[in-house]
Length: 187
Image (cartoon, rainbow, N blue to C red; front, side, top):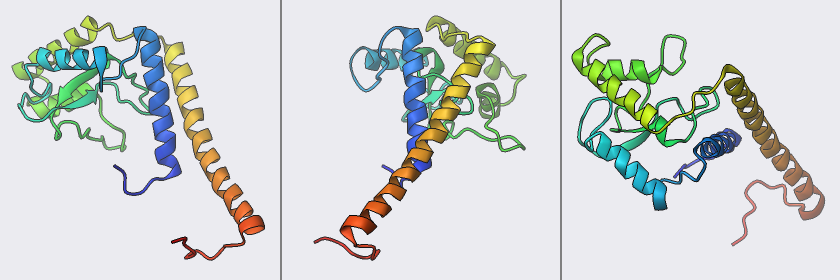
C-alpha cells in the first residue's frame, strides 16, 4: 500500500486500467488473475516455467512480470501472453544510459549470463514459445500509436483533473467552510 499518493499515481493507475481493458479486448474475456479462470491461467503459466523465475530460474516467491512493460511509455497489455513469473530481484527492470527501461530480452541477458550463452538462448526460446502459445497480439504500428496517444492523454488528463479537484476544494473551503487553517482537524 502506498504511503503517499500523488496525481501521478492516479494517472498511472488509469493508464494500467486502460491497458488491462485493451488486453482483455484482444483476449475476449477478463484477465483478473486474482480470481476465477484467469487465476488458474496464471498458475498454469507459473507451472510452464516449473515454478521458477523465467529470467534466472530461482525458485522463490514469484511475481508477475509484463514482458512489454505495463506503463504509458511501453504500453504493454495485461494479457496472458505478456506475463511471466519472475523473482523480486528480476522484476526490478534495469535502465539504460538514457534512463529508459531496457527490453525484457536485455533484462533476460543480464540475469542469465549474456546473449550468447546457452542458458539465455533456452530461456528466450521458452518465453517466445509462451508469447506464441497465449497469442499475445501482434499490434500494427498504427495500433501501437493509437494506444500510446490514448495512454498519454489519459495520463495527462487524470493528473489535470486531480489538480483541478484540489483547486475546486480550496475555493469551496474558502467560500463555505472558511477553514483555511492547515492544522484544523475534526476530532
